[in-house]
Structures are given as structure tokens and as C-alpha cells.
Image (cartoon, rainbow, N blue to C red; front, side, top):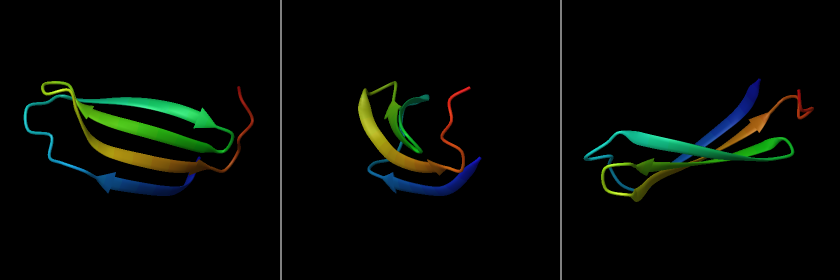
Length: 55
């Protein structure tokens, strides 16, 4: 369950589609959203999870 979410928009996704790649670091997930059409980073998100136990 996500308890906190922060998103930093860097530029519009003008061509698309958006591609998301996430890395998990304990209870924090860092997500990079890239415009697949241009290859440019469009946003970065951080999410805090309530339970960090892997399944």
C-alpha cells in the first residue's frame, strides 16, 4: 500500500507513450517516467510503501 506519493514534472510527454521504470529501496520506490518517443525524462516520482516486506 502506498502511504505517500510525490511527483516532480520536468517536461511534457509530447510524443509518448510514457515509459515507467521503478527501483525499490526498502520502503521507498523511485520511478523514472520517460517519453518513449523522445527518450527524454518527463517526471520523477517517489512512493513510500506501508509494508516493505518482499513477497
